[in-house]
Image (cartoon, rainbow over the protein chains, first blue to last red):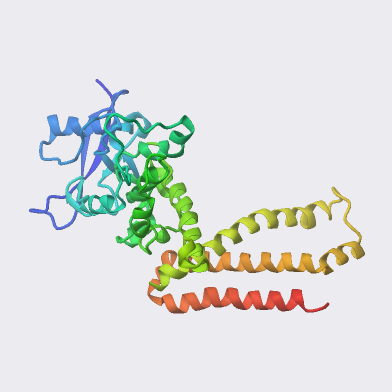
Length: 246
Length: 117
C-alpha cells in the first residue's frame, strides 16, 4: 500500500459556517505530487465540495497561491514530500477576505493593478512596421520584474498590507517599475502620482517578506526602495528648483 | 498631504543615516573596540588623535554622522511604534518623540562638537 499523508484543509462554507473550520484528508504521498495534486485528488475522489483556484499546474498562471504550513506558497510548486510527514496545513492566502474554503477575494489587487498603468506608454506610437529595439543591457533593467505572475503571495506575506489595506502593495509597485525601467516606455511621469502617494511606496517599511515569498524570483522590496530614491529625488528637485527648470 | 510632502525628505535622512551608520560604526567599533585594545593595529598617539578630532572638518563630519544616525533611528523607531506596537493612532505624539528626539539629539551633538573643547 502506498504511503499516505494528511492534508489539513481550511473549510469555510458561508451558507453553513460562521467560522472557518479544518478538515483532514488522507491522500497518497507520491513523489511527483505537489500540494495542488493532493487537492485535486480530494476534489476528484474524496470530497467534491472542496473549493480552490488553480489552472496551469506549472507556476505560470498565479492562481493556486495558498498558505501551506503557514507560508504563502504556490501549491503547484510545493511538493508533498518536502512537507512530509505532515499533516500539511492548507489555508487560504492571508490578508484577503475568504469567499469559500481556499478561495479568496482578489478584487482589491485587481483594482490597484491598473492604477499603476502596467503597460508600455508611448507619447507617440511609431508606425506599425517599425520596431522598438532594445539592447540586452536595457532588457536586464526590468526583466526580473516582468516575471511577476500576479499570484499575490507578496500581498499575503506583507505585514504592512495586513495592517493597511490602502497600501498599493508589492506586486503593483514592482509591475510599475517593470514598465518604468523599460527603455521603450515613456509613462513614468503618469505613474508617479499613484506610486509616490502616501499609500504607495511610502507605506512600505522594507520588511522584505514580499521578496522572500515571491515564487518567481522577483524582488518587489528592491523595486520599492529603488523607486523611493527616484521619488525622493523628484520631490527634492520640486522643492529646490524653480518651476521652469524641472 | 503633510505625510506626502515630508515623507521623502525623512526617508532620505533615514536612508543616508543607514548608509553612514552601516559603514562607519562597524569600522569605528572594530578599530577602537578590537584592533587598538588587542594590539592588532598600533593605535595613534593621544595627541595625534586629539588633533584629528579637534580639526573642524572631523567635527563637522562627526556632527553629520550623529545627525543622520539620529534621524535614521527616528524614522525606524516611528514605524516600529506604528506597525510593531500598533500605535498609529498616537501618530502626533510618536512623531514628536521620534523626530523631536532626533532634533534634540542633533542639537546636543552640535553643542558638544562645535563649541571649543
